[in-house]
Length: 247
Image (spheres, helix red, strand yellow):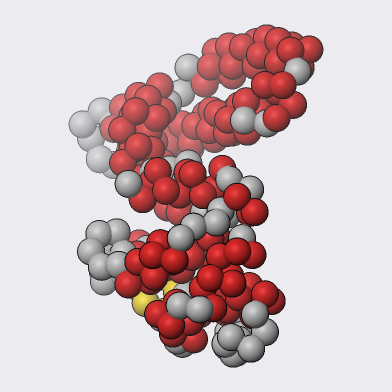
């Protein structure tokens, strides 16, 4: 459900994001998954609220809801995931002070006397979207390098074998980078207004994409990337909601 809500909010223009009062009050008071599912749940809540507050009507409405005003006036939280892996703890961390301040500023812009804008604090971690993208990239690296090393292993674990596995992993990561870059480029291209509104752009762009895809895949087949790429597209990306946009 939250995925659908985020998709709808992100697709709508700022002035089209007006919602009734119960949506705003319900958002700040909601409990359970995903809001309580780790530190990033609270950051997700604050991010979604800021997206809704981009609509001036919602800002005026929020100023009249005590629960929303109280939520925006709090200090916020900075918390890391409880795990032994430092990188995982960093990528799954959550912090909200800057988001609460952003939301308070949006409300104060429409209703100057409704609340006090909190003091600005520097973030300790990247934005939620950046952490999401970094986690997606990191898991892709693990899957790709692990598969390539497994394919290159011949049952003996010595220095030459390790070097061979490292070389195979490096080649696979290079191939995966090319395929990922091409995939992302195609995604952005087909979602652009110019692509689907103008047939003179759509047809040549589609033909060029097909030719480029064939060339890149021909080159990438030299490395162990077919299985990792298919696994990432069909399993991992859906599980991690890899292409989610929070902006």
